[in-house]
Length: 376
Image (cartoon, rainbow, N blue to C red):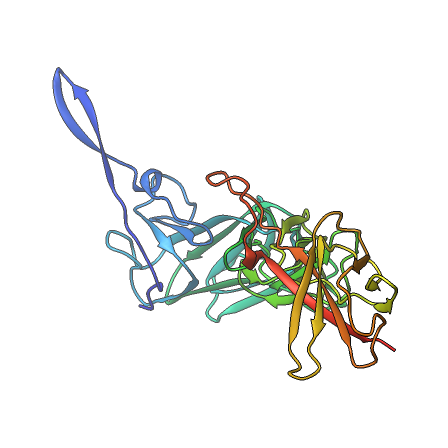
């Protein structure tokens, strides 16, 4: 006998009162046995009409057996029946092939509708494959097999048809999507629930900047149900979505956007348009405003050492783009050998937490960019 790859036998007992005495009565094993989908529930009958209480009930993860005698204790070698059933979630459904073979009779049902009927006593194995379209959601498969005389063989399988010309059913949109952002590491972890389609190939993860659209190229493709990304540390908001795709190339619609606002660790652009000229009182510097900057610093370069000296830090108003010094020079004009520089700064925007709340900016919260000009 070729046994199933996994079987489980379950029995139960109930209490009954007979003539004032408390006794135990065995409950039907089929009522007590539960099998986790997509594992089949298997029932053995001592007849070919599947009538009465099954002699044995267990779980079977594959229908592929051969018996040369009684299939189980208490069953005859001939004129017995075996029934398999399972209810499973097919996701979006689609085209499937049902393949059955048996010695002797075998019938296959989908939601109670007979799809294969090879019901006769034979001396050779008979087989048949039919193509069906399974709707989305949960559906029940049932296989009835009988052996009238002689050796017993039975085999059944159901597989999705994955040709692009046959399968044009998109997977369902992944559910349970969520994202968690770790400000300390700058990483965003996206998670979602597993799809139920049997022909699922994987998932595509997309990312976009707020105000932009998702591109045609995914951020990554994975067979997992999570992905960890490191979005640019610009202090801006980024959105993620997940799409499922199958082996035929069909792609689901995207999940609801999941957004994160990153910590700002990116410095502003260097100030452009820096100019310097001297007057009777000193020097006047000017430059173009830098978007996002909250302040500027003005430096003077030492012609002899090449080092810069900080002359002034301008933080209010942050849109200030000129600065004049009244420190007199000899001569009191802009010397060709004098170099000036400014650099813009922008605060790293770390979102406050529930435990800490907003905090004061530290010196380490500033990032810098610099440009220079030589007086002429």
